[in-house]
Amino acid sequence: MTVRLPETQRIPPRRTRYIRDERDPNAFLVQRSVFVDDAVLAREREAIFNRCWIYVGHESEIPNPNDFVARTVAGRPVLFTRDKEGHVHVLYNACTHRGAEVCRERRGNTRRFRCFYHSWSFSTDGRLVAMPDEEGYPEGFDREAHRLRGPARVESYRGFCFMNVHADAEPLDEYLAGAKYYLDLTADQSATGMVVTPGAHEYSIKANWKLLVENSFDGYHAIPVHKTYLDVQRARGDEIAGNTSTDWKQSHAYDLGNGHAVTVKEAPWGRPIARWKPSMGADTKPIIEESYRRLVEVHGEERAAEIANLDFNMHIFPNLVVNNIMAVIIRTFYPLTPGLLHVNAWSLAPPEESPAARRVRNESFLSFLGPAGLATPDDNEALESCHRGYASDPGEGWSDVSRGMDFPEPRNWDELQMRTFWRRWSDLVEGMVEY
Ligand code: FES
Ligand SMILES: [Fe+2]
Image (cartoon, rainbow, N blue to C red):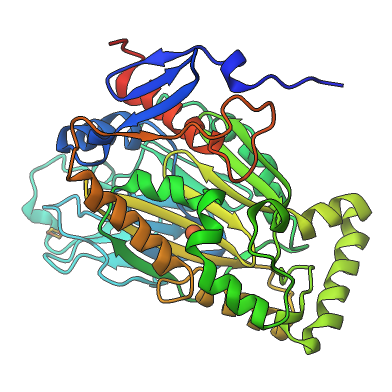
């Protein structure tokens, strides 16, 4: 049997400008200026968002040749396209003539993007295919040199597409490290491939982006902050005690490598994939049970039980969250300023699921996870409250992130997952400079 050592015995201490990872006594502290300082954000853009693999979209969003989605990824307007041969591309949505956005629609299907400024036209793989009065250009003008630009690297894992502006980045497969196991657990919920359902959530929070990283897998806040949601589920018939240590079963937190981390548990709510609870309605019971039988047929008893019962909240460094809870959500976010972040979130579902299960899933996407639901507004208020609090003492105040740091097996409501993020953040932003 492997004996797991606590972090405090595996990981060397560090004492940098922003992070104190101390021993004797053990403590993990984060300097609060990291949340409010413009210079820190500038450094994050350079050392994190321009170095790491950044989530762009799910390939199911562009199922057909010439489908496209236009969105902003880590501050860059891009086109996520499938060309006429079926290959996926990420192109910068900026005309190579004088820079206008070549696409002004949010999504659609087109053979060409025609820039509205002077009508240069580009194919869905980025080639410059037409322009008015080409004869006006000097001899030797090269259309090929004027194709739409894009990030140096674009790679996908099980439908999750990422970009990296840094040509020498390690392959996505290596970068994802232990996160792949959990992406597999999500992808394996469908025999034909999970799909992003129509619609998305988009909202802003007046807080620093790293607060949303912490919140997205912070089990410690669930009982106090989400009392309303848990009370509603209890009123609908679910067994919820409102007690962290009894409501969450099999609770663990794992460092997945490269700054990624996950919390796993069996939560007290139902899951439309294959775990029925009374709040889902009696009519859905046989349907959810049938869905479980299908999983057993495809994956066997053990894997099916894991797919059905393992709730997890995973953060893939730096700004992707996959929450596999009462619905499956993909959430990505980006800081506009140190005190303002923008969030995009999508729901992921098996296309073969019944309308009744889809109704339960959509309900959860709205009622727990939506920006106007019973939970996310409470989270957002907590983040904004922290951010307001930082103004009182930004240079001297430190946040305490030390829960469970001397446990061999920290739980979902400890803070190993946040420390995993902060250590990686410090490696990249501070380059392990000792103070
Ligand atoms: S800027 Fe696009 S054609 Fe001129
Ligand atoms: Fe929350």
